[in-house]
Length: 241
Picture 1 (cartoon, rainbow, N blue to C red):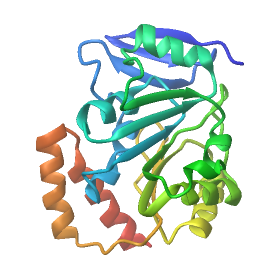
Picture 2 (cartoon, rainbow, N blue to C red):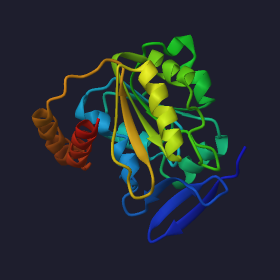
Picture 3 (cartoon, helix red, strand yellow):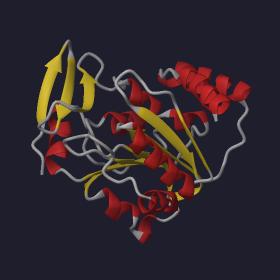
Picture 4 (cartoon, one colour):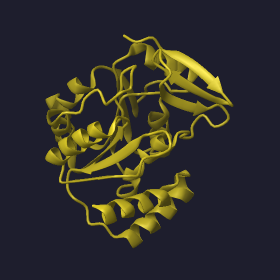
């Protein structure tokens, strides 16, 4: 299992798996905020649902998404699946991850084991997937079988967001695999640090961009995320599709 290392620059604490690659970040002055742009984009499912009952994160990172969902969606059960036990203890000690309770469950296990467990079939509203090893060259799982298992975990109107930090051929591999498992897949333009965030819908939504912009305004006022930029990105995606 990879060693966990920490760096701090300009008030931002970062988690690494023994390499230069950042696996998560937290601004010390705002520990519950989402510091990285791509991590903010992983929340774009809020454009389509504001009342999930169960949110699952595959890959804990520095705990940012897990903390954010736990604090801003008090009616939801939040689960994080993380293989590396040291990542979990580091997040608890240095990144403000709360202890497990009746709504929060951080579990040490393999993400593939979670999505293929029959107990999780059709049980999840939102799945957030950010799975990388210490080299961070491509997602750990990027097969049709993995994404089909993810889809199987979702309720009929469930959604998945995925961080794709990889070379362009692997972008295509992942997006093609998702398209076999989900009715609709879209993605945002690449952010400055090289990440592309995709959203996959188990059931294709009806998209009204006027309504999405209204929803984006509510999101920005309610939980402080730049949701209008996500709608802009989805419009650019649709025009290029």
